[in-house]
Amino acid sequence: MQSIRFALVGALVMGAASIVSAQQATPAQTPDATAPHHRGGHGAFLKDLGLSADQQAKVDAIHAKYKPKFAAARKSAKPDMDAARAARQRGDTAAARAAFEKVRESMKATKPLRDQEMAEIRALLTPEQQQKFDAKRAELKNHAHQAGNGMHRRHQSATSAAKAS
Image (cartoon, rainbow, N blue to C red; front, side, top):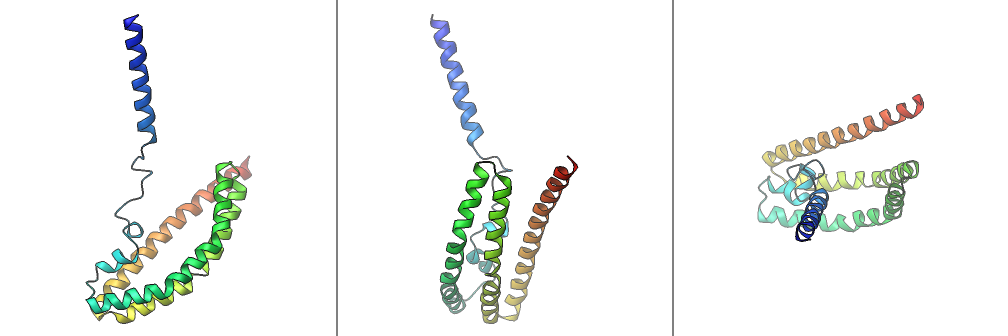
């Protein structure tokens, strides 16, 4: 009786351990903390430029000016984002794709705002800082382009597989 109880407790402990380890994020699921877009937004992006206190105050004012506009864009895209999430959770990939496309389209409207904000910030910088700024922006655009191409390839291969069957 004692050995059965011991075996049962051991099995429960092993089962609980496997559940806990399965729920922990693996490195492949965890965003790369060194990736530019995961290091704290504008603060980290500009931190490497060595801004003076005056420049930082001006940058903060520029961010404050644009923050409500970006928040409004996110708020307007939220219903579509929620619909996409719900569709994905119920396994409706076609509806999820359509909703994500609506989100993508509505967020495209923020690109001119983002470009304008970045131009205002760039104007505050010294020529050396501008070189670093331009290099960082190019790095971010390249990273986003690579991520976008990966999504595009996955979509193309899924579409081709669906057409083949």
